[in-house]
Amino acid sequence: MSMTEDQEKRFMDFRDRKALIDKDVMRTDRTHPFFNREKKEHLVCLKDVLMTYMMYDFDLGYVQGMSDFLSPVLVIMDDEVDSFWCFVGLMDRVHENFEMDQLAIKRQLQNIKSLLEIVNPRLANYLESHESDHMYFCFRWILVAFKREFNFDDIMHLWEVLWTDIPCSAFLLLFCVAILDGQTHMIIENKFGLTEILKVCFFLFYY
Image (cartoon, rainbow, N blue to C red; front, side, top):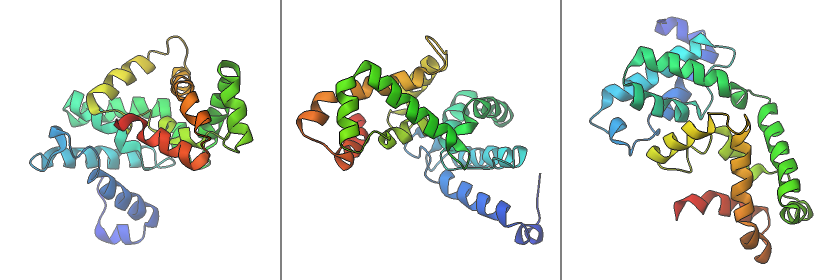
């Protein structure tokens, strides 16, 4: 679908979403050889697929983070049409994460809390006593399925495992709980509050 400049001037939602796509394309996986400065055609393809999807599902449109899901698909498929339809299938799976009300994300955070209460009640009680049991420090993990926490090759392996839905469709949440469980000693012994826990969750994968 093409749109004239004059049409864009009268279509604010389209302009805003296009501008957001332009920004995200320029900062998505730019350290990966597939998207480096010499491979401008791949950046064009990344933008084109996102623009096409934005019009394909205009109710959802484009939300920051979608490009994180698309970039590995492009690397694997190396074809714009095939990548688009794979991306459609992928978004059918995760689209609730990008809805404006964020109800799906909040529900998953609540499920992480419930799981942690069973698996590690000591940590769950600690988080509650420190007003951190909303689990917001897991937000990014869920939103883009750890895409920004692991390197490119590792995330493709992780996604392949997570999306088998074995042992369950909520395997991503079990993975989150396992990571938190492994940080119990650090969080409790250091008497970390929300700010420190956020830092732990952010820097955990960079060492």
